[in-house]
Length: 123
Image (cartoon, rainbow, N blue to C red; front, side, top):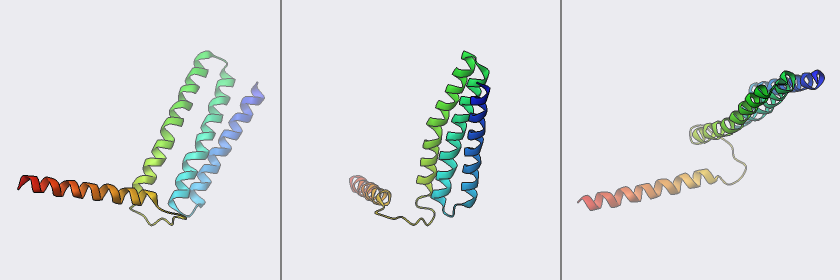
C-alpha cells in the first residue's frame, strides 16, 4: 500500500506543479484561471487519497474526504466568480456569442426601466 500512496503523492504533486506552470505560461486571464482551478484540484485529490491510504485510519479517511469535498465545492465557485467579475473589466477575446454580456445588458435595461417607473410614481 505504500507504493500506491507514494504514486498518489507524486502524481498529485505533478498536477499541482503543472497547474503552477500553466498559471505562469498561459497568456490570457481565462486560461490562467482554468489552470489555477483544474490541475491543483486534481492534485489535492490525489494527495488526499495517498494520505488516506497511508494512514489506514477511519478518521484520516473521513478527514481527507471532507478536505476533498470542500475543495470540490469551493474551487469551481471561486473560479467562476473570479472570471465573472473580470468579464467586463479586462479585454477578453471570445470565440462565439457573448451571452453574459447580453444577459448583463438585459438586466441593466430592466433595472433602468424599473427606476424610471419608480421616478414617475413619485411625481
